[in-house]
Amino acid sequence: MLLRQGDPWPEFFRECQREAFHLELRDSYAEPYESEPLRRFLAGEPELSDPSPEWRAMVRATTRRGVTVSRVRVVTVPLTDYQRWLLSITYHNVEAGDDIRYVPKHLVPADDMPEDDWWLFDGRLVVFNVTDAHGKPTDSVSTTDPGIAAYCRGVKQRLWKLAMPYAEFNGAHTGR
Image 1 (cartoon, rainbow, N blue to C red):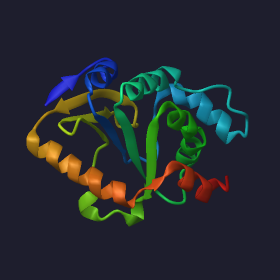
Image 2: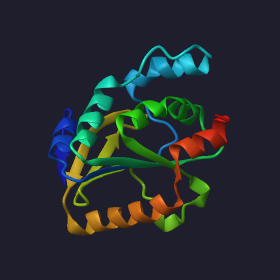
Image 3: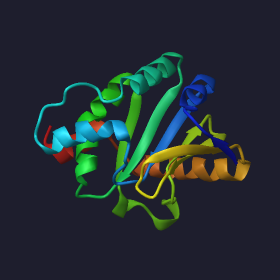
């Protein structure tokens, strides 16, 4: 395992050749840049702008190179306030080329429910998101251990079969 400090994501995406997949398991995250947009959402105020344009630009550049970017969000239903907000802005990611799918936690077999979020790059590099006790991202840890990568590929395949595409999930949970 290799501790990656700072912002390693541009490097990971730049080096990715075929596929970047993200598994999200938390009902909320404590990203500092999300605090104000989340507050606005909960107060019923309009969205001012894309809360993460740099991320979307990176995803867009990656998908233009022919790399698939996708994720599965495993969520509690009914959705937490954070997940309701995230669902309301996910169209930004989808427009950038990120294929986002959802699966309710209660539908996930216990064996397919890892403890941590991770990214899987080209089926071989696994990057775990490390957070502090409050859910705030700190660093990331990466590995190319074949056993860990194989486990992540298996989880991805099984959850992908259970997951509902963003547009369908959004329609079912917002009426849009």
